[in-house]
Length: 155
Image (tube, rainbow, N blue to C red):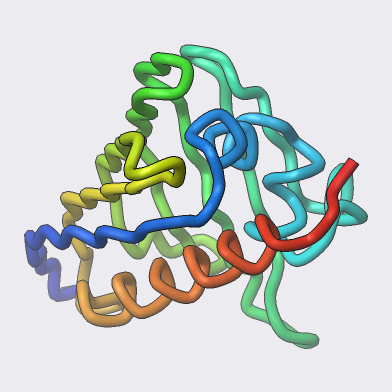
């Protein structure tokens, strides 16, 4: 018999970016900009990364080390208020094993000409495959990549 476990947890990350709210929001909404910081490069579009930034739209990111496993991030946008918030659900899997299911809210607030971003994740981590600490570490690294992408002169 296979052991089936769940672990529920939440984390919140607050970041301030030296860029206007519209610029930071666009980095989440525009497929080329999002692919640069989320999937590693704009070249990822069509090579395992897809983004349909609409309510009900999906975001997919697939990849992994040579020889596997293939990790898949599959999200669906539930609520989008331009320049204010994004709410989405996503699941992570490795090959055919579901690792977690998560609800994420990203809020954008003007902060002295820049942007305060508040990201809240509420997740259920399945069968010991993933932990909230691992997920938070990965999310912090992605938000660091977002910050780096905002300093470049993107088209």
